[in-house]
Length: 77
Image (cartoon, rainbow, N blue to C red; front, side, top):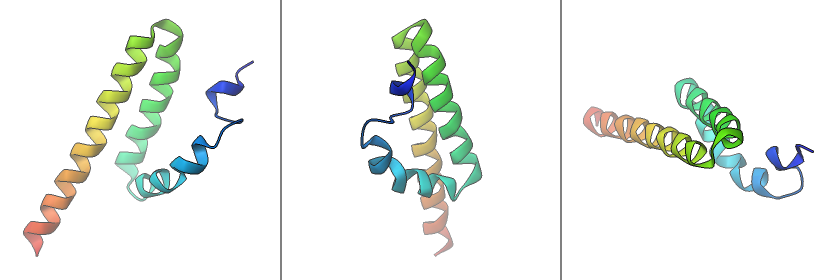
């Protein structure tokens, strides 16, 4: 019944695995990724627009975080 939630019948996790591993290298970004995924799954039962908003907010936070890290690395060099 809930197989579609965990992508068991598709190649989605195979394609996402490298990105998940990069996020896992930093604890804060990985926690945001997990919270975004859980929020999107929970909100999807309430309203699909809430799930979409959770995905965009989480993705924006992770992208902003990595841009901040890259900016700090450029300043250090």
